[in-house]
Image 1: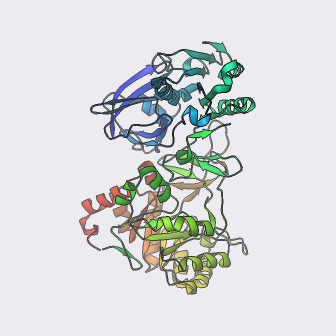
Image 2 (image 1 turned 180 degrees about the horizontal axis):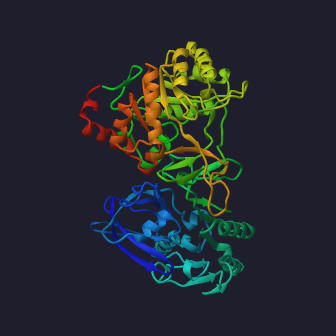
Image 3 (image 1 turned 120 degrees about the vertical axis):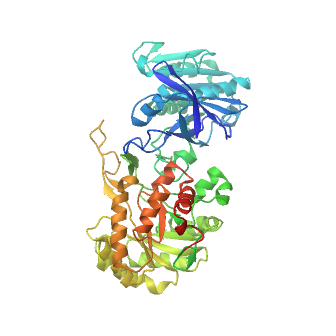
Length: 259
Length: 293
Protein backbone atom coordinates (compact mmCIF):
# COMPACT_ATOMS: atom_id res chain seq x y z
CA UNK A 1 0.00 0.00 0.00
CA UNK A 2 1.20 3.49 -0.84
CA UNK A 3 -0.14 6.90 0.06
CA UNK A 4 -1.18 9.46 -2.51
CA UNK A 5 1.06 12.47 -1.93
CA UNK A 6 -0.25 14.72 -4.69
CA UNK A 7 -3.02 14.79 -7.28
CA UNK A 8 -3.43 17.62 -9.75
CA UNK A 9 -4.99 18.42 -13.07
CA UNK A 10 -2.64 18.38 -16.04
CA UNK A 11 -4.53 19.69 -19.05
CA UNK A 12 -7.39 17.25 -19.61
CA UNK A 13 -5.56 14.53 -17.65
CA UNK A 14 -4.52 14.15 -14.03
CA UNK A 15 -1.13 13.46 -12.55
CA UNK A 16 -1.02 11.75 -9.21
CA UNK A 17 1.96 10.86 -7.09
CA UNK A 18 2.49 7.88 -4.81
CA UNK A 19 5.23 7.37 -2.26
CA UNK A 20 6.53 3.83 -2.61
CA UNK A 21 8.47 2.93 0.51
CA UNK A 22 9.65 -0.43 -0.80
CA UNK A 23 10.95 0.07 -4.32
CA UNK A 24 12.84 -0.85 -6.36
CA UNK A 25 13.10 2.22 -8.54
CA UNK A 26 11.44 1.59 -11.92
CA UNK A 27 13.15 1.82 -15.28
CA UNK A 28 11.56 3.92 -18.05
CA UNK A 29 8.83 1.89 -19.79
CA UNK A 30 8.02 -0.25 -16.76
CA UNK A 31 4.54 -0.22 -15.29
CA UNK A 32 2.60 -0.79 -12.09
CA UNK A 33 -0.76 -2.38 -11.35
CA UNK A 34 -2.77 0.07 -9.27
CA UNK A 35 -6.03 -0.12 -7.34
CA UNK A 36 -7.48 2.29 -4.81
CA UNK A 37 -7.71 0.76 -1.33
CA UNK A 38 -11.20 2.19 -0.78
CA UNK A 39 -14.12 1.93 -3.17
CA UNK A 40 -12.52 -0.69 -5.38
CA UNK A 41 -14.54 -3.90 -5.76
CA UNK A 42 -16.17 -3.11 -2.42
CA UNK A 43 -19.06 -1.53 -4.25
CA UNK A 44 -19.73 -5.10 -5.42
CA UNK A 45 -19.21 -3.90 -8.94
CA UNK A 46 -16.53 -2.50 -11.15
CA UNK A 47 -13.74 -1.60 -10.83
CA UNK A 48 -12.68 -5.08 -9.77
CA UNK A 49 -9.27 -5.67 -11.31
CA UNK A 50 -6.25 -3.41 -10.81
CA UNK A 51 -5.24 -1.19 -13.72
CA UNK A 52 -1.84 -1.02 -15.45
CA UNK A 53 -0.04 2.34 -15.67
CA UNK A 54 3.39 3.28 -16.96
CA UNK A 55 5.44 5.51 -14.71
CA UNK A 56 5.67 9.08 -15.97
CA UNK A 57 8.23 10.35 -13.49
CA UNK A 58 10.30 9.10 -10.59
CA UNK A 59 11.96 10.93 -7.75
CA UNK A 60 13.88 8.95 -5.13
CA UNK A 61 13.58 10.59 -1.71
CA UNK A 62 14.63 9.68 1.83
CA UNK A 63 11.30 8.16 2.79
CA UNK A 64 10.64 6.33 -0.46
CA UNK A 65 10.37 6.68 -4.20
CA UNK A 66 7.90 9.22 -5.55
CA UNK A 67 6.10 7.74 -8.54
CA UNK A 68 4.07 9.97 -10.87
CA UNK A 69 1.29 8.50 -12.99
CA UNK A 70 -0.67 10.20 -15.76
CA UNK A 71 -4.36 9.30 -15.83
CA UNK A 72 -7.35 9.96 -18.01
CA UNK A 73 -10.75 9.01 -16.60
CA UNK A 74 -12.32 6.77 -19.22
CA UNK A 75 -14.09 4.13 -17.12
CA UNK A 76 -14.82 3.01 -13.57
CA UNK A 77 -11.18 2.23 -12.70
CA UNK A 78 -9.55 5.33 -14.10
CA UNK A 79 -12.43 7.50 -12.83
CA UNK A 80 -11.82 6.19 -9.31
CA UNK A 81 -8.08 6.84 -9.56
CA UNK A 82 -8.80 10.37 -10.81
CA UNK A 83 -10.88 10.97 -7.65
CA UNK A 84 -8.01 10.02 -5.32
CA UNK A 85 -7.17 12.61 -2.72
CA UNK A 86 -3.93 13.22 -0.91
CA UNK A 87 -3.55 10.75 1.95
CA UNK A 88 -5.69 8.02 0.40
CA UNK A 89 -4.02 4.66 0.00
CA UNK A 90 -3.37 2.80 -3.23
CA UNK A 91 -2.48 -0.88 -3.66
CA UNK A 92 0.51 -1.18 -5.92
CA UNK A 93 2.29 -4.07 -7.64
CA UNK A 94 5.48 -3.26 -9.49
CA UNK A 95 7.64 -2.21 -11.14
CA UNK A 96 6.64 -4.77 -13.77
CA UNK A 97 7.57 -5.55 -17.35
CA UNK A 98 10.63 -4.62 -19.37
CA UNK A 99 12.00 -1.18 -20.18
CA UNK A 100 13.23 0.84 -23.15
CA UNK A 101 16.56 -0.27 -24.63
CA UNK A 102 19.46 2.14 -24.86
CA UNK A 103 19.66 3.88 -28.27
CA UNK A 104 23.10 2.34 -28.89
CA UNK A 105 21.66 -1.13 -28.27
CA UNK A 106 19.03 -0.60 -30.95
CA UNK A 107 21.37 1.04 -33.43
CA UNK A 108 25.12 1.25 -32.75
CA UNK A 109 25.41 4.37 -34.91
CA UNK A 110 22.63 6.26 -33.17
CA UNK A 111 23.27 9.87 -32.30
CA UNK A 112 20.09 10.43 -30.35
CA UNK A 113 16.49 9.44 -29.85
CA UNK A 114 13.14 10.51 -31.23
CA UNK A 115 10.28 10.04 -28.78
CA UNK A 116 6.78 9.87 -30.27
CA UNK A 117 3.80 9.97 -27.91
CA UNK A 118 0.08 9.94 -28.49
CA UNK A 119 -2.52 10.88 -25.87
CA UNK A 120 -2.10 9.27 -22.50
CA UNK A 121 0.77 7.27 -24.05
CA UNK A 122 3.10 10.20 -23.52
CA UNK A 123 3.62 9.03 -19.91
CA UNK A 124 6.52 6.56 -20.19
CA UNK A 125 8.27 8.84 -22.69
CA UNK A 126 8.43 11.61 -20.09
CA UNK A 127 10.51 9.45 -17.77
CA UNK A 128 12.60 8.13 -20.66
CA UNK A 129 13.34 11.68 -21.87
CA UNK A 130 14.52 12.69 -18.42
CA UNK A 131 16.77 9.66 -18.19
CA UNK A 132 18.24 10.27 -21.65
CA UNK A 133 18.75 13.93 -20.86
CA UNK A 134 20.58 13.08 -17.63
CA UNK A 135 23.00 11.04 -19.74
CA UNK A 136 23.36 13.80 -22.35
CA UNK A 137 21.72 11.69 -25.06
CA UNK A 138 19.93 14.12 -27.40
CA UNK A 139 16.20 13.42 -27.54
CA UNK A 140 13.63 15.07 -29.79
CA UNK A 141 10.04 14.82 -28.64
CA UNK A 142 6.89 14.69 -30.78
CA UNK A 143 3.52 14.53 -29.06
CA UNK A 144 0.03 14.26 -30.51
CA UNK A 145 -3.39 14.72 -28.94
CA UNK A 146 -6.98 14.26 -30.08
CA UNK A 147 -8.33 17.54 -28.75
CA UNK A 148 -7.92 19.89 -25.82
CA UNK A 149 -9.96 17.71 -23.45
CA UNK A 150 -7.74 14.75 -24.26
CA UNK A 151 -4.34 16.30 -23.80
CA UNK A 152 -2.06 17.08 -20.91
CA UNK A 153 1.36 16.72 -19.39
CA UNK A 154 2.85 19.61 -21.34
CA UNK A 155 3.16 22.04 -18.45
CA UNK A 156 4.73 19.55 -16.08
CA UNK A 157 6.00 16.25 -17.48
CA UNK A 158 7.43 17.89 -20.60
CA UNK A 159 7.94 21.35 -19.09
CA UNK A 160 11.65 21.73 -19.65
CA UNK A 161 12.08 20.58 -23.20
CA UNK A 162 11.18 21.55 -26.71
CA UNK A 163 8.28 19.50 -28.00
CA UNK A 164 6.84 19.14 -31.49
CA UNK A 165 3.06 19.12 -31.15
CA UNK A 166 0.20 17.87 -33.27
CA UNK A 167 -3.51 17.67 -32.61
CA UNK A 168 -6.34 16.04 -34.52
CA UNK A 169 -8.52 19.15 -34.10
CA UNK A 170 -5.75 21.69 -34.59
CA UNK A 171 -6.13 23.27 -31.14
CA UNK A 172 -2.39 23.12 -30.68
CA UNK A 173 0.57 22.59 -33.01
CA UNK A 174 0.29 20.84 -36.35
CA UNK A 175 -3.32 20.18 -37.40
CA UNK A 176 -3.05 16.46 -38.03
CA UNK A 177 -1.27 13.39 -36.74
CA UNK A 178 1.96 13.24 -34.80
CA UNK A 179 3.15 10.73 -37.38
CA UNK A 180 3.09 13.58 -39.95
CA UNK A 181 5.73 15.28 -37.81
CA UNK A 182 7.71 12.06 -37.51
CA UNK A 183 7.64 11.54 -41.28
CA UNK A 184 9.03 15.03 -41.82
CA UNK A 185 11.67 14.50 -39.16
CA UNK A 186 12.79 11.17 -40.58
CA UNK A 187 13.15 12.82 -43.99
CA UNK A 188 15.79 15.10 -42.46
CA UNK A 189 19.47 14.41 -43.00
CA UNK A 190 20.28 13.18 -39.53
CA UNK A 191 17.44 10.67 -39.33
CA UNK A 192 19.64 7.72 -40.28
CA UNK A 193 21.39 7.98 -36.95
CA UNK A 194 18.18 8.23 -34.94
CA UNK A 195 16.24 5.67 -32.97
CA UNK A 196 12.49 5.99 -32.40
CA UNK A 197 10.60 5.20 -29.19
CA UNK A 198 6.81 5.41 -29.34
CA UNK A 199 3.83 4.97 -27.07
CA UNK A 200 0.23 5.71 -27.94
CA UNK A 201 -2.90 4.27 -29.52
CA UNK A 202 -2.51 1.09 -31.63
CA UNK A 203 -3.13 2.89 -34.93
CA UNK A 204 -0.41 5.41 -34.10
CA UNK A 205 2.04 2.66 -33.16
CA UNK A 206 1.30 0.81 -36.41
CA UNK A 207 1.95 4.00 -38.37
CA UNK A 208 5.19 4.69 -36.48
CA UNK A 209 6.42 1.12 -37.03
CA UNK A 210 5.57 1.33 -40.75
CA UNK A 211 7.36 4.67 -41.16
CA UNK A 212 10.43 3.39 -39.36
CA UNK A 213 10.45 0.17 -41.38
CA UNK A 214 10.31 2.18 -44.62
CA UNK A 215 13.22 4.35 -43.52
CA UNK A 216 15.26 1.56 -41.94
CA UNK A 217 15.11 3.23 -38.55
CA UNK A 218 15.11 1.07 -35.42
CA UNK A 219 12.17 1.60 -33.12
CA UNK A 220 10.67 0.38 -29.88
CA UNK A 221 6.98 0.56 -29.09
CA UNK A 222 5.49 0.63 -25.60
CA UNK A 223 2.15 -1.11 -26.02
CA UNK A 224 -1.05 -1.48 -24.07
CA UNK A 225 -3.40 -4.44 -23.72
CA UNK A 226 -6.19 -5.39 -21.32
CA UNK A 227 -4.38 -6.91 -18.36
CA UNK A 228 -5.74 -8.55 -15.21
CA UNK A 229 -2.56 -9.39 -13.30
CA UNK A 230 0.58 -7.76 -14.75
CA UNK A 231 2.92 -10.64 -13.82
CA UNK A 232 2.22 -13.41 -16.33
CA UNK A 233 -0.56 -15.23 -14.47
CA UNK A 234 -3.72 -14.50 -16.43
CA UNK A 235 -2.56 -14.76 -20.08
CA UNK A 236 -5.07 -12.02 -20.85
CA UNK A 237 -2.72 -9.44 -22.36
CA UNK A 238 -1.78 -11.46 -25.43
CA UNK A 239 -0.68 -9.49 -28.49
CA UNK A 240 0.27 -11.14 -31.80
CA UNK A 241 3.96 -11.70 -32.39
CA UNK A 242 5.66 -11.70 -35.76
CA UNK A 243 5.61 -15.18 -37.26
CA UNK A 244 2.48 -16.29 -35.41
CA UNK A 245 1.37 -16.91 -31.88
CA UNK A 246 1.22 -14.37 -29.11
CA UNK A 247 3.34 -12.79 -26.43
CA UNK A 248 2.15 -11.80 -22.98
CA UNK A 249 2.62 -8.07 -22.95
CA UNK A 250 3.14 -7.95 -19.18
CA UNK A 251 6.17 -10.24 -19.04
CA UNK A 252 7.44 -10.04 -22.65
CA UNK A 253 6.70 -6.29 -22.93
CA UNK A 254 5.28 -3.71 -22.60
CA UNK A 255 8.19 -2.51 -24.76
CA UNK A 256 8.53 -4.46 -28.01
CA UNK A 257 10.78 -3.99 -31.02
CA UNK A 258 8.97 -2.30 -33.89
CA UNK A 259 11.01 -2.30 -37.05
CA UNK B 1 -1.23 -31.46 8.77
CA UNK B 2 -3.65 -31.08 5.85
CA UNK B 3 -3.29 -33.59 3.07
CA UNK B 4 -4.81 -34.46 -0.29
CA UNK B 5 -4.81 -38.11 -1.36
CA UNK B 6 -1.84 -38.79 0.89
CA UNK B 7 0.11 -35.72 -0.22
CA UNK B 8 1.01 -33.74 2.89
CA UNK B 9 0.54 -30.00 2.58
CA UNK B 10 1.65 -27.04 4.67
CA UNK B 11 -1.78 -25.43 4.62
CA UNK B 12 -5.13 -25.71 2.89
CA UNK B 13 -4.74 -23.17 0.08
CA UNK B 14 -3.56 -24.13 -3.42
CA UNK B 15 -3.99 -22.39 -6.78
CA UNK B 16 -6.62 -23.00 -9.42
CA UNK B 17 -5.16 -24.31 -12.68
CA UNK B 18 -4.35 -21.58 -15.17
CA UNK B 19 -4.40 -18.70 -12.74
CA UNK B 20 -0.77 -18.59 -11.64
CA UNK B 21 2.27 -19.16 -13.83
CA UNK B 22 4.94 -20.05 -11.29
CA UNK B 23 7.72 -19.86 -13.87
CA UNK B 24 6.72 -16.40 -15.11
CA UNK B 25 6.19 -15.23 -11.52
CA UNK B 26 9.68 -16.44 -10.63
CA UNK B 27 11.12 -14.40 -13.49
CA UNK B 28 9.25 -11.34 -12.19
CA UNK B 29 9.79 -11.74 -8.45
CA UNK B 30 12.97 -13.82 -8.37
CA UNK B 31 13.75 -16.50 -5.83
CA UNK B 32 11.78 -14.59 -3.20
CA UNK B 33 8.79 -16.33 -4.77
CA UNK B 34 10.22 -19.69 -3.71
CA UNK B 35 10.87 -18.47 -0.18
CA UNK B 36 7.33 -17.15 0.20
CA UNK B 37 5.46 -19.42 -2.19
CA UNK B 38 1.78 -18.54 -1.77
CA UNK B 39 0.32 -22.03 -2.20
CA UNK B 40 0.80 -25.37 -0.43
CA UNK B 41 0.70 -27.21 -3.76
CA UNK B 42 1.08 -25.90 -7.30
CA UNK B 43 -1.39 -26.84 -10.04
CA UNK B 44 0.02 -26.29 -13.53
CA UNK B 45 -1.78 -24.65 -16.38
CA UNK B 46 -3.58 -27.27 -18.45
CA UNK B 47 -1.26 -29.16 -20.78
CA UNK B 48 -2.45 -30.60 -24.10
CA UNK B 49 -0.74 -33.15 -26.35
CA UNK B 50 0.13 -30.61 -29.01
CA UNK B 51 1.28 -27.01 -28.45
CA UNK B 52 -1.44 -24.36 -28.54
CA UNK B 53 -1.02 -20.60 -29.05
CA UNK B 54 -4.32 -19.73 -27.37
CA UNK B 55 -7.28 -17.68 -28.48
CA UNK B 56 -7.29 -14.45 -30.40
CA UNK B 57 -7.55 -11.32 -28.21
CA UNK B 58 -9.55 -9.85 -26.52
CA UNK B 59 -9.23 -12.58 -23.90
CA UNK B 60 -10.47 -10.95 -20.71
CA UNK B 61 -13.38 -8.73 -19.75
CA UNK B 62 -13.99 -7.20 -16.35
CA UNK B 63 -17.43 -7.74 -14.88
CA UNK B 64 -19.11 -6.77 -11.60
CA UNK B 65 -17.03 -8.53 -8.92
CA UNK B 66 -15.27 -10.74 -11.42
CA UNK B 67 -14.11 -11.25 -14.95
CA UNK B 68 -14.76 -13.33 -18.06
CA UNK B 69 -11.83 -15.03 -19.72
CA UNK B 70 -11.31 -17.05 -22.85
CA UNK B 71 -7.59 -17.74 -22.96
CA UNK B 72 -7.70 -20.91 -25.05
CA UNK B 73 -5.18 -23.06 -23.12
CA UNK B 74 -1.93 -21.75 -24.59
CA UNK B 75 0.79 -24.26 -23.70
CA UNK B 76 3.92 -25.88 -25.05
CA UNK B 77 2.31 -29.27 -25.55
CA UNK B 78 3.18 -32.41 -23.60
CA UNK B 79 6.72 -32.84 -24.96
CA UNK B 80 7.63 -29.18 -24.42
CA UNK B 81 6.17 -29.27 -20.92
CA UNK B 82 8.04 -32.43 -19.95
CA UNK B 83 11.34 -31.20 -21.35
CA UNK B 84 11.29 -27.51 -20.43
CA UNK B 85 8.76 -26.74 -17.71
CA UNK B 86 8.58 -29.81 -15.51
CA UNK B 87 12.23 -29.69 -14.36
CA UNK B 88 11.80 -26.02 -13.44
CA UNK B 89 8.49 -26.63 -11.66
CA UNK B 90 10.24 -29.32 -9.63
CA UNK B 91 12.27 -26.51 -8.02
CA UNK B 92 9.13 -25.16 -6.37
CA UNK B 93 9.03 -25.85 -2.63
CA UNK B 94 5.61 -27.54 -2.84
CA UNK B 95 4.10 -30.66 -4.45
CA UNK B 96 3.17 -30.34 -8.12
CA UNK B 97 -0.21 -31.26 -9.61
CA UNK B 98 -0.22 -31.35 -13.41
CA UNK B 99 -3.44 -30.45 -15.21
CA UNK B 100 -4.03 -32.24 -18.51
CA UNK B 101 -6.67 -32.17 -21.23
CA UNK B 102 -7.18 -34.25 -24.36
CA UNK B 103 -9.96 -34.92 -26.82
CA UNK B 104 -10.21 -38.67 -26.24
CA UNK B 105 -9.15 -41.57 -24.07
CA UNK B 106 -6.02 -42.22 -26.10
CA UNK B 107 -4.73 -38.67 -25.76
CA UNK B 108 -5.53 -38.54 -22.06
CA UNK B 109 -3.88 -41.93 -21.69
CA UNK B 110 -0.65 -40.80 -23.35
CA UNK B 111 -0.45 -37.84 -21.01
CA UNK B 112 -1.23 -39.82 -17.87
CA UNK B 113 1.34 -42.49 -18.80
CA UNK B 114 3.99 -39.86 -19.48
CA UNK B 115 3.36 -38.14 -16.14
CA UNK B 116 3.24 -41.46 -14.30
CA UNK B 117 6.91 -41.86 -15.18
CA UNK B 118 7.89 -38.47 -13.80
CA UNK B 119 8.58 -38.16 -10.09
CA UNK B 120 8.13 -34.38 -10.28
CA UNK B 121 4.35 -34.82 -10.64
CA UNK B 122 2.65 -35.69 -7.35
CA UNK B 123 -0.84 -35.86 -8.82
CA UNK B 124 -2.71 -35.37 -12.08
CA UNK B 125 -5.75 -33.16 -12.55
CA UNK B 126 -8.02 -34.09 -15.46
CA UNK B 127 -9.54 -31.08 -17.18
CA UNK B 128 -12.68 -32.66 -18.61
CA UNK B 129 -14.27 -29.44 -19.91
CA UNK B 130 -13.47 -30.49 -23.46
CA UNK B 131 -15.38 -32.35 -26.16
CA UNK B 132 -14.65 -36.01 -26.81
CA UNK B 133 -13.79 -36.12 -30.54
CA UNK B 134 -15.62 -39.42 -30.94
CA UNK B 135 -18.91 -38.52 -29.26
CA UNK B 136 -18.77 -34.74 -29.64
CA UNK B 137 -19.96 -34.42 -26.06
CA UNK B 138 -18.21 -32.44 -23.35
CA UNK B 139 -16.83 -35.22 -21.15
CA UNK B 140 -17.37 -33.40 -17.88
CA UNK B 141 -21.00 -32.65 -18.72
CA UNK B 142 -21.86 -36.36 -19.02
CA UNK B 143 -21.66 -38.80 -16.09
CA UNK B 144 -21.25 -41.74 -18.49
CA UNK B 145 -18.40 -40.08 -20.41
CA UNK B 146 -16.71 -39.11 -17.17
CA UNK B 147 -16.93 -42.62 -15.74
CA UNK B 148 -15.66 -44.17 -18.99
CA UNK B 149 -12.68 -41.82 -19.04
CA UNK B 150 -11.75 -42.60 -15.46
CA UNK B 151 -12.10 -46.33 -16.06
CA UNK B 152 -9.72 -46.00 -19.01
CA UNK B 153 -7.15 -43.95 -17.10
CA UNK B 154 -7.28 -45.56 -13.66
CA UNK B 155 -5.15 -48.61 -14.59
CA UNK B 156 -2.41 -46.38 -16.04
CA UNK B 157 -1.15 -44.78 -12.85
CA UNK B 158 -1.04 -45.06 -9.10
CA UNK B 159 -0.81 -41.27 -8.84
CA UNK B 160 -3.87 -39.48 -7.55
CA UNK B 161 -6.31 -38.51 -10.31
CA UNK B 162 -8.28 -35.37 -9.57
CA UNK B 163 -11.26 -34.60 -11.78
CA UNK B 164 -11.92 -30.90 -12.38
CA UNK B 165 -15.71 -30.60 -12.55
CA UNK B 166 -17.54 -28.12 -14.70
CA UNK B 167 -20.36 -26.07 -13.16
CA UNK B 168 -22.13 -25.86 -16.51
CA UNK B 169 -24.41 -28.84 -15.84
CA UNK B 170 -27.74 -29.29 -14.14
CA UNK B 171 -26.38 -31.83 -11.64
CA UNK B 172 -22.65 -31.63 -10.91
CA UNK B 173 -23.05 -34.19 -8.10
CA UNK B 174 -24.06 -36.84 -10.64
CA UNK B 175 -20.80 -36.25 -12.54
CA UNK B 176 -18.85 -36.37 -9.28
CA UNK B 177 -20.45 -39.70 -8.39
CA UNK B 178 -19.51 -41.03 -11.84
CA UNK B 179 -15.93 -39.87 -11.33
CA UNK B 180 -15.80 -41.62 -7.97
CA UNK B 181 -17.21 -44.84 -9.41
CA UNK B 182 -14.71 -44.65 -12.26
CA UNK B 183 -11.83 -44.54 -9.80
CA UNK B 184 -11.04 -40.87 -9.25
CA UNK B 185 -9.14 -39.98 -6.06
CA UNK B 186 -10.54 -36.47 -5.69
CA UNK B 187 -12.65 -33.86 -7.44
CA UNK B 188 -12.02 -30.15 -7.81
CA UNK B 189 -14.72 -27.59 -8.47
CA UNK B 190 -15.88 -25.29 -9.82
CA UNK B 191 -14.43 -24.44 -13.20
CA UNK B 192 -15.58 -21.12 -14.68
CA UNK B 193 -19.21 -20.52 -15.60
CA UNK B 194 -20.07 -19.95 -19.26
CA UNK B 195 -20.64 -16.26 -19.75
CA UNK B 196 -20.58 -13.42 -22.23
CA UNK B 197 -20.54 -9.64 -22.13
CA UNK B 198 -21.26 -7.05 -24.79
CA UNK B 199 -18.97 -4.07 -25.30
CA UNK B 200 -21.27 -1.07 -24.83
CA UNK B 201 -19.22 0.95 -27.32
CA UNK B 202 -19.44 -1.54 -30.20
CA UNK B 203 -22.42 -3.76 -29.48
CA UNK B 204 -20.11 -6.71 -30.11
CA UNK B 205 -19.00 -9.35 -27.59
CA UNK B 206 -16.25 -8.07 -25.32
CA UNK B 207 -14.41 -11.39 -25.62
CA UNK B 208 -12.81 -12.00 -29.02
CA UNK B 209 -14.20 -15.52 -29.45
CA UNK B 210 -17.65 -14.42 -28.29
CA UNK B 211 -17.89 -16.07 -24.90
CA UNK B 212 -15.76 -17.31 -22.06
CA UNK B 213 -15.85 -18.33 -18.42
CA UNK B 214 -16.86 -16.16 -15.49
CA UNK B 215 -14.72 -16.19 -12.34
CA UNK B 216 -14.25 -14.07 -9.23
CA UNK B 217 -16.41 -13.34 -6.18
CA UNK B 218 -19.47 -13.10 -8.44
CA UNK B 219 -19.55 -16.91 -8.71
CA UNK B 220 -18.70 -17.76 -5.10
CA UNK B 221 -22.24 -18.59 -3.94
CA UNK B 222 -22.66 -20.91 -6.92
CA UNK B 223 -19.38 -22.62 -6.07
CA UNK B 224 -20.35 -23.03 -2.41
CA UNK B 225 -23.69 -24.50 -3.45
CA UNK B 226 -22.08 -26.98 -5.84
CA UNK B 227 -19.39 -27.98 -3.33
CA UNK B 228 -22.15 -28.70 -0.78
CA UNK B 229 -24.07 -30.79 -3.30
CA UNK B 230 -21.00 -32.76 -4.37
CA UNK B 231 -19.84 -33.27 -0.76
CA UNK B 232 -23.21 -34.78 0.05
CA UNK B 233 -22.94 -37.20 -2.85
CA UNK B 234 -19.36 -38.51 -2.75
CA UNK B 235 -16.82 -39.47 -0.13
CA UNK B 236 -13.86 -38.17 -2.16
CA UNK B 237 -11.77 -35.25 -1.00
CA UNK B 238 -12.86 -32.00 -2.65
CA UNK B 239 -10.76 -29.03 -3.77
CA UNK B 240 -13.23 -26.17 -3.55
CA UNK B 241 -12.81 -23.03 -5.61
CA UNK B 242 -14.73 -20.16 -7.12
CA UNK B 243 -14.24 -16.57 -6.03
CA UNK B 244 -12.30 -17.26 -2.84
CA UNK B 245 -10.67 -13.97 -1.89
CA UNK B 246 -10.27 -14.09 1.90
CA UNK B 247 -9.89 -16.44 4.85
CA UNK B 248 -13.60 -16.03 5.45
CA UNK B 249 -14.37 -17.23 1.93
CA UNK B 250 -12.01 -20.16 2.38
CA UNK B 251 -13.75 -21.08 5.63
CA UNK B 252 -17.05 -20.98 3.80
CA UNK B 253 -15.75 -23.37 1.17
CA UNK B 254 -14.26 -25.75 3.76
CA UNK B 255 -17.44 -25.66 5.80
CA UNK B 256 -19.40 -26.57 2.67
CA UNK B 257 -17.39 -29.76 2.43
CA UNK B 258 -14.08 -28.95 0.74
CA UNK B 259 -10.82 -30.45 1.99
CA UNK B 260 -8.67 -27.82 0.32
CA UNK B 261 -9.40 -24.44 -1.18
CA UNK B 262 -8.03 -23.19 -4.48
CA UNK B 263 -7.51 -19.51 -5.24
CA UNK B 264 -7.74 -18.27 -8.81
CA UNK B 265 -8.83 -14.83 -9.89
CA UNK B 266 -7.86 -13.23 -6.58
CA UNK B 267 -4.21 -13.98 -7.43
CA UNK B 268 -4.58 -11.63 -10.42
CA UNK B 269 -5.41 -8.83 -8.00
CA UNK B 270 -2.71 -9.82 -5.53
CA UNK B 271 0.16 -12.20 -6.29
CA UNK B 272 0.44 -13.05 -2.59
CA UNK B 273 -3.29 -13.77 -2.19
CA UNK B 274 -2.78 -17.49 -1.53
CA UNK B 275 -0.45 -16.86 1.42
CA UNK B 276 -2.68 -14.11 2.77
CA UNK B 277 -5.78 -16.30 2.62
CA UNK B 278 -3.94 -19.20 4.30
CA UNK B 279 -2.77 -16.84 7.05
CA UNK B 280 -6.26 -15.41 7.52
CA UNK B 281 -7.67 -18.90 7.67
CA UNK B 282 -5.30 -20.00 10.42
CA UNK B 283 -5.71 -16.73 12.33
CA UNK B 284 -9.50 -16.59 12.19
CA UNK B 285 -10.20 -20.30 12.27
CA UNK B 286 -7.38 -21.87 14.29
CA UNK B 287 -9.19 -25.19 14.28
CA UNK B 288 -8.47 -25.35 10.51
CA UNK B 289 -4.96 -23.94 10.71
CA UNK B 290 -1.77 -25.36 9.25
CA UNK B 291 -0.91 -27.31 12.39
CA UNK B 292 -4.20 -29.19 12.58
CA UNK B 293 -6.19 -31.37 10.29
